Image (cartoon, rainbow, N blue to C red):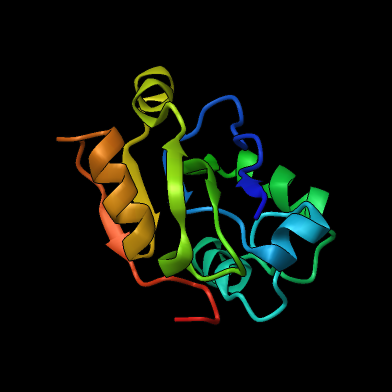
Length: 140
């Protein structure tokens, strides 16, 4: 079983919000896009929060819009073994340097997309306050 790796962080000039997921699933890895599975609700949810139709935009424009609106995006898990796309199947994980990113960008709010992202975040950035959201994944 090969190791899945996350994508680079999406960070604009002055992010005020940081959204952290767990690790891209199979569809996202294949497309090389954050939240690439067509049934994942991430782009619709964030678009609603920003009052923008992000889902209908090409992927690169979505990322530009996030940056323009002060939203940074990354995953807590840097790489792991995982058959399929379920967070519950993640094994032998290593974490991104989340605490360093937070110290550098100093976001006003941190949101964690799902329980796996929250559990991994607590291990690699203990004591840093963040809001846990329900997962946007169709598997949950």
